[in-house]
Image (cartoon, rainbow, N blue to C red; front, side, top):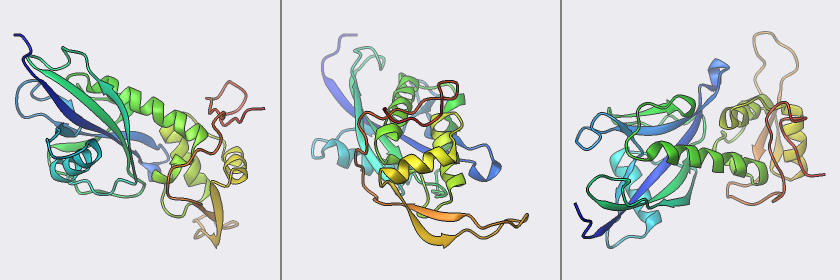
Length: 239
């Protein structure tokens, strides 16, 4: 079938670090299950067609609110355009993707056909949505290195152990909390609140509470790099 026109859709890759209380935090992505052909039964990113009277940002926010009732996105930014002529069967559809981040421990109310799925264990995905998730995760990992984007994944106040779990869950490997605190505090990314956490069952010294200094994205060190264990340390800055 020849393509006679080009349509434009907007899709959101929405991440949240979940299962913090279990001790096994994971980065999860929001997906909805398709009820109609094509790709019936497979899982898709939330989104849809761009209207003639809206820009991309307005479109993705509208569709997150309408289709999955998600209004708790702390950060939303445009990522990439996917334009393979055959990405959708029998149609010419260009997709603009967005990265959305939901802070922990927010629990958005979701429709019955929409669920969180671990990024490391995705279900059967529709079209090219799997590669879109992989691309978004790589961009998130990079931005955790050189920006303060962690503010969009964390609660308003947190201990260093919670922040370690959030970064570790987002990156997929363990992060040393002492090194993390040293780097982020030196960059002015996090600040002590002056309060402490409630003591746990084992007692001991209450942990200090921190917050992100800003709730908007900024570059903190454009040359910084996060690296997994086995490369010297799990959180590195340039020499």
